[in-house]
Image 1 (tube, rainbow, N blue to C red):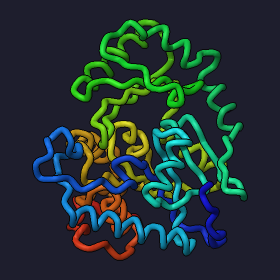
Image 2 (image 1 turned 60 degrees about the horizontal axis):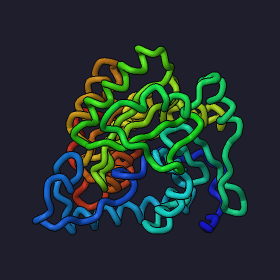
Image 3 (image 1 turned 180 degrees about the horizontal axis):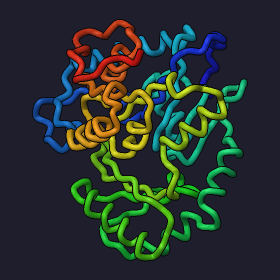
Length: 313
């Protein structure tokens, strides 16, 4: 069981709401001979120095959490067992709260260190989805070629998840969107690519359910103003949270096409000061974004000239 850390300060600390894979979890170093499909989405090679910066950033994040100077909220597509495994394997900070399963699960850490599902959030999703469950949605899309159903532990009452070829993510996503509209199924498509396996990932969620909506529900119930939250992500299933009005950090290994989408959204909304595109990869990029928005000291050379953004006053 994951150990419980000491209680944090009663003074409200900034909240880092962060994706895990490709964001908070350090990317492993790669040999120069590795093929492009095994590199991160942006095509950046991951050398020993980059790996060192990421590990340094992770240690410093842990120090902030331990000191009560930063609250951390995991916002991930992973299910609970997978989250606990990666916390142990990568020595990640242990959060008091987790948003898992692409925004369809909210979990709170109990005093004994175990996590409990927030039934109030399950009821909230039931009201949004009505009588339609993910298992019924599967019957509407099962005949589409190119989709492979993910393992049972990665499915949920309000989440239907598939693997696909990474090169087919966009096409299959559009095919699914058309099918859902044609059959009046009130579910939406969230597509991304796993930064470690290069698998295409497609999740079908009730309309109105995603990482951003889950963060909003959690923050409102906990009394956290949006201004205290900084979201960090790297992939397509982070788009909603990256553009939800929170201060947003897109790490340097994100797909350039996603970076452009996020940038265009903030430019159009007049919120460019809330978006920071880091040059640092994964964990180093998270720290770089925190440095930009909060003034904490940068790690090594991961801090670069901001890309047209300034901290909020």
